[in-house]
Amino acid sequence: MAITFEHVTHIYQPDGPLAYQGLTDVNFTIDEGSFTAIIGQTGSGKSTLVQHMNALLKPTKGIIKIGNRTITPETKNKHLKPLRQKVGMVFQFPEQQLFAETILDDISFGPQNFGMDETTAHKIALQMLELVHLPTSIAEKSPFDLSGGQMRRVAIAGVLASQPEVLILDEPTAGLDPRGHKELMDLFAQLNQEGTTIILISHQMEDVAQYAQQVLVMDQARLVRDDTPQVIFNDAEFLNKHNLLQPESTQFARELERKGFKFSSLPITEEQLVKQLLPQLGGSHG
Ligand SMILES: Nc1ncnc2c1ncn2[C@@H]1O[C@H](COP(=O)(O)OP(=O)(O)OP(=O)(O)O)[C@@H](O)[C@H]1O
View 1 (tube, rainbow, N blue to C red):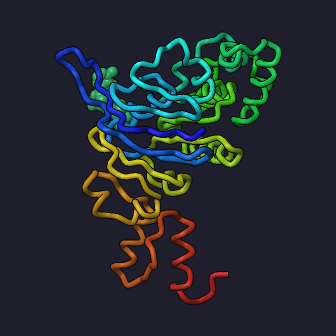
View 2: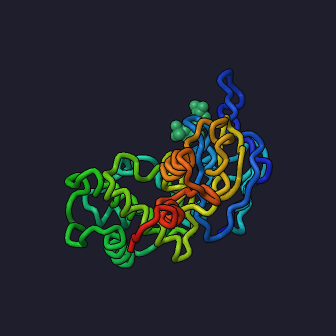
View 3: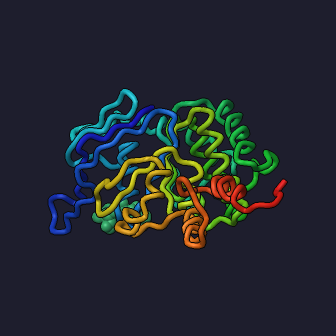
C-alpha cells in the first residue's frame, strides 16, 4: 500500500492552553513495497508522524491516503479496524505490551481480534514464531519467562500474525545485543523483499544507510528532506544543521580523504567503503 501525506498538520490538545504543533504542513509519498527510514533528533515528530499512518492519530488539517483509504480530520474511528490490520505498528519496547498467559495466545490475539478463527490463528502464530527465529516448542510457555530479546520477538510475531501490508517500526531494536539487532534487521529486510512496505524510525544511521531506499528527515515538526540515503548522507552541511550524524563508514571515509584517499561518492555502508578502498591500498587483497 502506498502512503501519501498532503499538507498534514497535527496539533496536540488544540483547544487547551497546552496546544502543541506536532506536525506542520507535511507532504510526501511512500511507494508500495519500499523500505523508508524516518530520522530526526529526539522530539522532532517522528512518532507523531507514523501514528497517523494507521490513524492512531488523525490530522488536524490535511489528508492522508493509505492504499485506497483516505483519512481526514473528520474520519470516524469506527471504520478504522481494516486499516489497522493492514498497517502493523511495532512500538518502542513492544514487549511491554505482552499480556496473555501463553506465547501462543499472545501472538494469535491480533488475528482473532480481526476475525480469524482460533485454529487458523494458532497455526499462523506457530509460523510467526519460526519467522522470528524462536522454537515452536515454547508456544505454551508464559511470555514472561523469556529473555528481553525473546520477548521482543514474540511481540513482533504478534504484529506480523495479522499479516500487515505495511509494517511500521519505531526503533524496534533499541536495547538489543548486536546479534539480536542484526537478526531482526535482516528479518525486516526479508519481509520487505517479500513485498511488505517497511517504515523504520531509527537513530542508527548505519541501519538507515544499509536498508532504506528513502529517508524522511524531521526537524521541529517539519519534514525537512525526502531523499535517498546516498544523497542525504553525502550532505554533511545539511546533517550538521539538523544535528544528525553520518554513518560510521562515511565518517571513516572522510578521515581517509584527509589522508589522501579518493572517493567518487562518499561510501555510506561498510560494503561500499571496502569496495572503493581496496583498489587504492595496493598489493594483493585476494
Ligand atoms: N500526547 C501528546 N501531547 C502533547 N504533546 C505531545 C504528545 N505526544 C508528543 N508530543 C510532543 O510532540 C513532539 C514530537 O514528539 P514525538 O514523540 O513525535 O517525537 P520523536 O521524534 O518521535 O521523538 P523520539 O526520538 O524521542 O522518540 C514532542 O515535543 C512531544 O513532547
